[in-house]
Image (cartoon, rainbow over all chains, first blue to last red):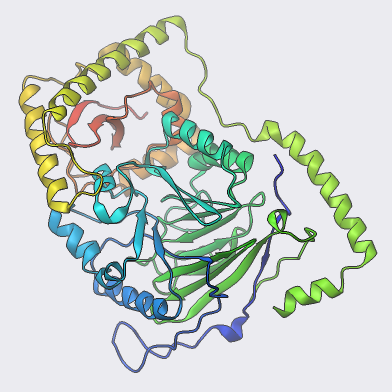
Length: 311
Length: 207
């Protein structure tokens, strides 16, 4: 157990000045959208992806957010998308796969962007067979990109079988970065749901034991970056199709940064020992950004860089 | 990255010493943390309870075998299926299992002894504030109002599949992968994960 409290360090690169003023209300369609502004290194050969959650509504707002994703992809060519679950609200007939997913992300699918889904509490298990969710018929699975291992978990049903699978896979995983993503957040400042303590009791010891670096979750319909917990970085990106405006508890000791005024998605780039992230809102604002430097995995001297908030 | 550059230039000898001390402290902390990082395990059962749990698991396995045999006769669903194929497969699978279990009755899997055991496990899992919170979740927040309490009927696909608390799952009798526990209100259901049929249910499972 080589972990880790100090081995991952976060540097927030962009201050409030970098947060663009909202130049357009995406809802009323007035005036021009905010300019595309990439704060990520955008290097050739890095692992570039997008994170969304709680998308499956098929609403106008979900479509608008997808358009913003498309605009950003023209500049930042992310290769794939991680889905945090609740991929389909309500019925799950064949037509719902079209209206709540395929039609919304058709331009991205046409550009061969791959979606990797996890299951939420509104998702049937049969989604694991769906061609565009790339789950290989499994409710929980692992895939690798470059020096990163991704673990898609089914937090809706974390039974003994899954716990054993996760332990086994992580124990032999030599990837530089281990990223887990699933629906229910182990830590959250949400007023409606909050931290999933029972889930955390089970998964956190495994993450710590095997050196999981970053965790993405959804369920809460907002964005939140949690203060590092025992050295692990937790993000919530659950406003890809629904928004729970003002739901983040003010003054929560867990919050490093939160955004619950509009829908959003995350762009992420992993390059060697750095994980950069940028969070974009539906109006096109950058609402958070930064870099996690994994000194334990760097070629450098492992020095500690103090965390600093961007704003 | 001006911030990082700044750190590089200010890295003094004294800071390096402090970092080394911090690293040593971490090493000690990580050794002691081995014990803190244990995943919770279920408490052992009495011999009598063990027998009841094994018998329950056997009955669920019998259902799993039945539905496996039925599914094996159907066209296999691809791992890259179209939505229409998923929908058709589920519908046909439901029809076959419903037909095969036409006479199934409530309590055949959740026998009275199994119900007593499971109720006591749930009661031990949720105490005090946790119980109140979980009751709030299942009774007020979860969108499961349209779920019928009827054996061999489908769990509505628009109904929420409430997260099963993982610590409870470790405690309850283990199910084959084809069958899931689901809370609907205070009731506990056994639901087939592919065809969505309610295999059995027990009422007032949550105290």
